[in-house]
Image (cartoon, rainbow, N blue to C red; front, side):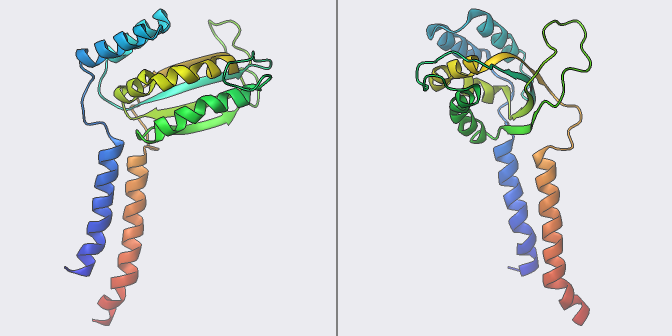
Length: 212
């Protein structure tokens, strides 16, 4: 095979594999999938109000990726939680929760997009009380609502969720579907592969053309 053709075929195949993994092509969740999730959560004794909100979110699935925006206020004096060391800090408790979440997210092409500590109190606040102070903010990318369902529906999630609840004084989390997202990894990875391959093409074959 022509070496120059091979140079372009390899990154093209790599990009195709990445996009296939990074994108949920399964379409919107079916009623059967949502029914199974709701029944499972009810059998495990989940919060009825939370289950109801998530059921509505899942039944209105578009099949697209989404971002979860999180405002986080850590608890200065978290209670003791079974499974954690007595007197564990909020950071330690959140770490125990994320021991499950990070692997569950990453193997499903979901990941943090932004995380940062708050550097000041709320600057603009309308129509909500008690939201002046926050510890941190984060944005997480989810491949699809099906991915979130798989993560939340895993019994291991229920075992870890108490750590998160104890670690937080308050939090707000809500999903958005982007109409503009230049930071999408499919764009960034594609552009990076294109640039690197073009540079390799010039380095390996540009000289041959000049000699000819």
